Image (cartoon, rainbow, N blue to C red):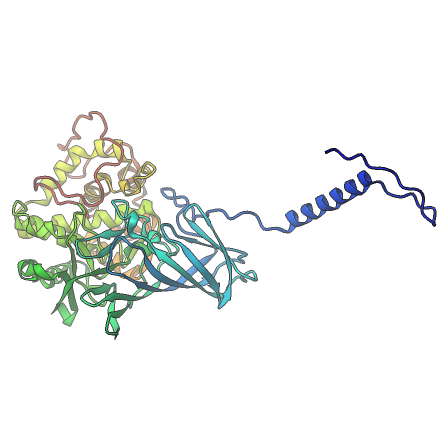
Length: 522
């Protein structure tokens, strides 16, 4: 029912009574002013941030540098159910921050504390946006503790958790570590890691680095591991399963630890026993192994790739069990992942466009090992790569300026142009500056940038110093040109006529060929 207000008579002081409509208008005005004041003081809505990587613009976060991660996971025994987890990030701020963004997806956040005080939080696409009680001053140390779940339901080819027959392993390339834990998920921000993994009786948990203790109850065990060198988030590894852990010694007494399905330990031994010799071979090329341990993690799962997770490279079981793969081929893939411990892990790419340095060198040493041990010449492989190179550049971009992947296919940046295409550029460099200068360059690169990050400009400058002349023109042509330049010393090499470019994405990361012919990437 519509009510019609009535006017009141004047009061004793002669003031005109305020009608109901006037009182309503005054109340609405006061309410509007209050809303405006609140809106002016309210913080803007949470939004995702990034460090400006040209291939992954939203990846990583500005304003801080992580010094350490402490990751605690509890596994139920069912690899379809979320793990409960606590992630503690210790960082140094590089600017004043009212909010801190962490990369995180595929988990539910229960609470966040900043320096032991409760903090508010919100999700913005694949960012967890944390607002502390007080802004963080530039140059301060901050500890962020996130209680969350880590959901393997999303496990698949885009990475994060991968299911095995008896548990879980991790695959964090290219930007999938944040599908497992909150982090600054960009290779430019390396940090120390501590892992604490609790699993039911009968399971074994392993992670990067060295063991740092075990805690036992009647129903479960908690394993602790720590890294002794900083690590990029994409290289983190946690494996949980009914596994056997096998130990042996490498060069200089290096601890070599292999993690394999219990049922396969006998079958795989002939391959596992090769690792110390592979390490010795690589040390003869580029210098001492850069980490505290190494080994193979063999997963009973169909992944289609191998991955150089730091100190514990991930391998698909069928690489070692399929009879059609000849011995030289399996050896070359093992050496590829081992070479990454120097190129990609110890020296990490500053941006994802610098991926060619890591994959090109791993492919280079894979091919060099095959030449020395398998009788398949490096020159012939490079001649075939030269013929295909223009097609690779058309499909995926030049080695140092790869095309971005389509949405939902982030791993598709791992195309032939950053594997054999990049190794071809290294071969051209060796032809240009000579074998001696080239080999000194490889050793100097891993020595100067050990435990750090470096990019294409750093490599160009060091190569020029080793050559004693400016190589800017050489690198512009070989790393950024749309067409493959003439090969020094091989004027007869010609690119094959281009056909229709391959579909966007190329092979998945480190996909092996259906029939052995060229070594796969990871």
